[in-house]
Length: 493
Image 1 (spheres, one colour):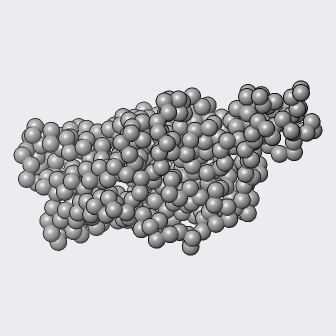
Image 2 (tube, rainbow, N blue to C red):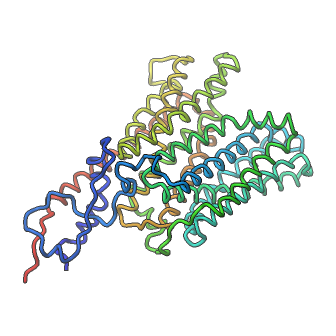
Image 3 (tube, rainbow, N blue to C red):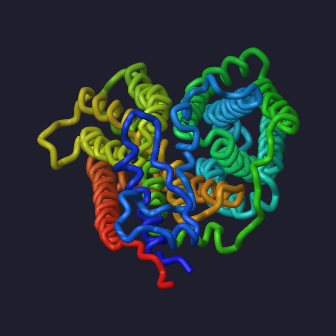
């Protein structure tokens, strides 16, 4: 029998992320690799305390490639093809989602839809993603990551083409039913696509995960900005059907190519004790879920509320559009930079902590908050929205990677079940935040005003900062106690 208590092993495994931040937050790109200790070696161990941390069963998955972890020059041809394929599909999907926004309300009104019915149709999407993301994550190992990905993008491609024939749908109640059905089916496809895509990225590119998360945030941001413009151009040239037929065909083409080029995520079977329910028993996962929801709320809250807030200042439509563009541009441009830095310095929690601190003054300036001696001005709003866009990348991008690190430090295997579980939790939390931001944020603005709402959101971030700090302070204290007790003695002969 081993002389090392099982409780000590579990305690240090749970605290190893603190050691990761202390030891790895440097530009060398290397990490401390914990050695596996057998029972034989334990018996022969000296009686003096070890100078190294107690070994764990899992190495940091993002440090497996050492100094070349973020070098794209070492990528194989199939990895490049996989990356390009995922990028094209992501871009086409976000273009389709954004290009319909300016045209759908007008088309729906022609079919006799009221504003509330239009809101229900468009709001059903986030609700479906919220409900079914955990389901997709739970069963991804059973279905297969590749099959779920291909099925998801095939559904999205077909529903995108179906949306192109919206002018030919019957008016009245049939239009409402068809629109709801198509939106729900497309949301299911998007949920399967996004959940499987995260798992593919995590498995195929472990040392580049944050870099690629930043890259795909940029691709999605560009698709969201270009979508309305490209959709309007294609609509003028070829009618309502053209943008949806084109984007849908590109997505379906990606599904066909994926069948031949995307490989299945490695699977070692399904362990009921290592599923999503077990993940949600980890305290640090709840801290990260709080971070996911809050960051999604902040990213979506301004969509329906910022326009009326700055419109009262009597500025031109061009200036208003520039402010909205600045918000998206600041996040989109800096996202890959944050991702690269996170992979380079290998310290996710430090970036989340620093980014959260910067978000607080940004939100206070947007109001500006009544607690600040400032009056509302274009300058304060511009500065606030610029800081918000830049700092949100540092908060949002490393969260998925930190969730993977957390569960793996608790002994979760490196397989499809783990990737699917984390992907499902991540997608559900982001969808929940994306739903809360516009809805509760809009209600809050109606009742207490924009300045006090941004102040409340700042308070939520402060609570998260304190929670994160106390969590890691407690981990550090506990880890030091474990290390002081880490004296290995030989068993009696």
